[in-house]
Length: 224
Image (cartoon, rainbow, N blue to C red):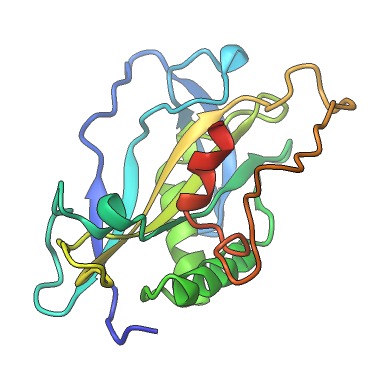
C-alpha cells in the first residue's frame, strides 16, 4: 500500500438546477441531528425516474499526493486514463415509510475498496473514513432521495489515479470522490426471472488477474 494520506476537500456542486418555489415537503429523521426535520424534496418527476445520472447538490472529494494535496485531475495524462488505475463502488440509500434512511452494509463496500486498492497499488481511505464520507454525501443530498417505493439514491464512490504519469508506474496523486443520483427501480416491473447466458469464450476474470476486485478495467470488456 502506498504511504500517502488522503485529505478531505468539500465540494458543493455548482450544476444543480431546481426550482425552489415548487418543492414537495417530507419530514425525515436526520441521523446528523438526531431529530425530525422538515425536508424539501427536489423538484423532479419522481414517478418517471430511470437508472441514469441526475446532478444533485453535493459531492465528496479527498485527494492525496506526494507533494501537493489539492491538485485537479491532470487530464489527459492522469493514471486512470492512461493505465486504468481506478476503482468504483456502488450502493444505495433508501427512504423508509417512517422517514428514516437506510444503507445496506456500507462498511463492506469500504472493505472491498481497500482490497481493490491494494491490488491496484493505490492508497485508500480507511473503512471508517469511507462510511463517514458516504453518510456525509447522502445527508447533504437528502432531498434527492426518492420517496418509499419510488426508487433510491444511488451512491457512486470512485478511487482513481488522478496524477500525471507517462511511464508504466503508479500515479503520483490519487482522488477519492463520491457523487450520487436519484434512480428508479432497476426492474420497473418488479423482481422477476431473467434470462442468462453462460459465456465460455470471453473471460472477465483469470487467475492472478484483477477479476476479484472492482476495478474499472473489468467493465469495458463487458460491453462486447
